[in-house]
Length: 346
Image 1 (cartoon, rainbow, N blue to C red):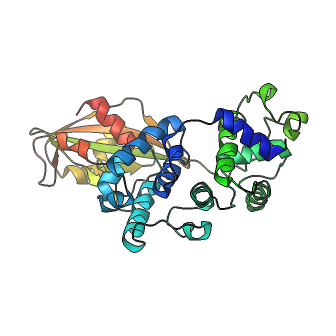
Image 2: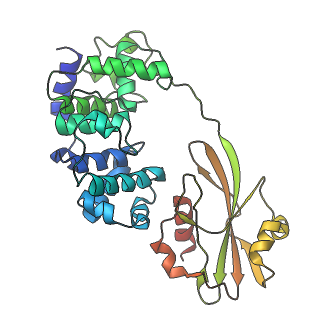
Image 3: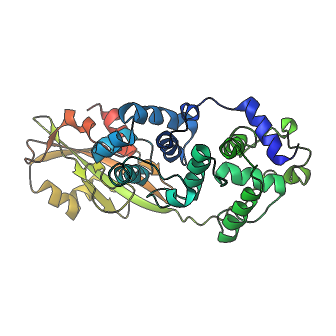
């Protein structure tokens, strides 16, 4: 058997049982692909099931409020995916009468849909001859064929797509695409793959040349920056607090957070109380202050690390825009805020 036939046969034996594999409904496939991007199956599966339960059709998702979508997405990260998901659902429901595009080229025009997602939907739902290339596919192809071009360089992206395209079978394209992705996820793992029991081990270039741990090659382009976040957690005598909606562009756009003061270093209690932004928030009101976490909480994002302190401000009363503490759980918040709320037991 050749490369393609071997993977297809392996998949027939090792195929995992996921709910989206029991349908060719493009809504379900699209939903699963968006949720599972940069996400482990174990983490993403409950989100997929929750979305299908709450929004069984694209019309249900389109008619939902954005806050409800973001709340259901909470904890999954990469919130732009959820916002794009909602925008695309409204476009399909309102402008396309609920019908998904049926070709790779048309799917690629949808917001939040790139080459990989368009290829997945087009091949799985419509058997279009277009190859998927995700992290798993990069790894399998790079190792098996010994390709040492960086996978995140423009040349690498082009070459791997062409290579993947050349390997497609004549039919059952969706089945093969899922096979190579599953093979990368289960067999050709990033670390310590079990090459002794790999059905491709007799012809794998990386194994032959002892380069399994070296491939694929990725250029590290991301420069990590440090930020110091000071969240101001107001607690009034009548059980209220303040949450603000983030409206500026960024990963947390349209999520809620406690009032934030960003500084260029960690603050002592004295530094905190003398900070001009903090003083403006307190507005001269009588209060007491305490630091919830003596050790800063480090929240790691792809391009930045947030060194976070939560400052508890006990105060007699708050302005009219304050909300009941019990209502804070209804709003979508970043996982950093959610974990704090659980820890303080609002």
